[in-house]
Image (tube, rainbow, N blue to C red; front, side, top):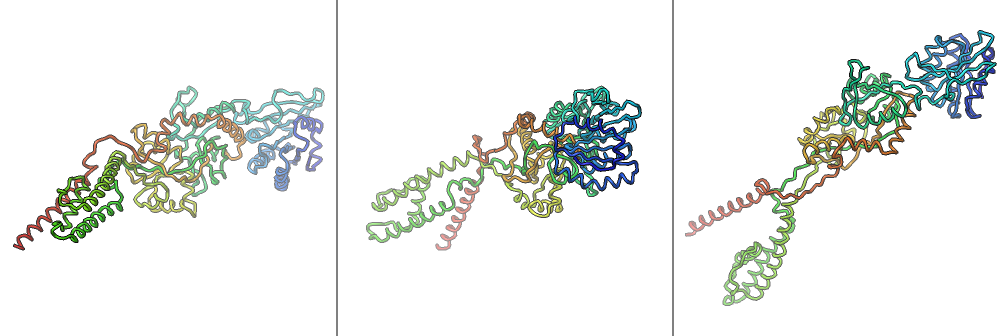
Length: 598
């Protein structure tokens, strides 16, 4: 036990009543009691608070159960101490505060709000009569002024300690609220959570703002468990929140930091900059960002009739055709003229081409047996080759390839014709605007170059899909939102028109937020953990996203049974027209040469 002198001030308090009360608190034997006994001199009080601050903070590091006892009859000092304790983070929830005073409750009205947010009790000592009395009070959080103070126990020399409630001393008043308060929750409509007006006779105009979705379901479960009701408040700018140049915050984060709301529903991406001004709950989703880009169309390559055989195979066929025809012609020329009248290599090449095209050949009576053997081997080779070509061609016409142009963020950055879509005033946007290295530095440079477009979540539904389908926009967003957009488009069109990148970026922890140092954070964390263990959150998410898995891994090749159109095979007609044009050219040359020679 540690105490700070000022004995005369302490002598004014009934020690027996004080220590009897402390003995009922149930703290372990190792707890530390810091006695702050302050005179009415405000200058002395300020100096003592400053001197004691560093020593008190050191004590918090060596003890998990700290009880701070403040004894004073100065309401201004008590109010200043409570405010200083909250701002200086001295009195965290594990720290117990016992304020002892001879002031009456009306004189302590300035303390009610501060003490309601602490693990604190108030002991009011009445020694103005012969029968001394000590009364213990707790201050309930988020309750109107008339019912904020609750009497817990009283002590007199004759009756001893009398409990007036079943509550323990220093109750966990934030784990389950003793009385049902009404909290303010800030929320913005998105593609996952829809806003509506709900009939409420007690609300202004008979209606109040309400939301449906997986996040409102989570909030309702937490509210029923902790015992509070709530009202919704939209942020003025309709965004989640980023730090502004003047140091303030926009969006829902700004609403919570200005203490206009007690809870931010979100969900919010956990970031270091946000953690400076708000507290995050336990994460209920671990996700990452991906690129959502348009998929190519299932089209037939007009030059697909050349694809069954590789270019090297086509080259080998033509080479063998020419070489074999020349060899046959040369070998035939070595025979006596009376045994062979075929010395033209063009005739041999023509016959080989006829075999390649599965046509008949000229009469074989004038062929030597070695020529017949060579021709037979060529026929066998062409039989295997043409059957392979026909099978591959049929497969290519029936199986359509679907291209996926952007598989990485770097590929997006390398294409100057593509505009990236990011969520306006999001943590990801703040990150690429402030980072000084890596690929997201290039994203920041792309914004300066005018290649970044910002949309709010409410604009995603009607605006993103048409833009991305045009082919000159891609969306970079958290995975669950990408899944929803793809599922919604599949539900309306029956097609998977989008694909996601192979790479993942910016691992994200999705949480709710509360005011900085709010004692409510521990209770909410506990409920979120229980919800996650039960699998309720994932189930809620599946219920609001029909067809959520239909386009997660769309095939890049599909089999079709539709008829071929002229647009699918115009390459063959080009080859036909080219051949006819070459034939006419040769015909003209032959006509010209025949007239010239004769």
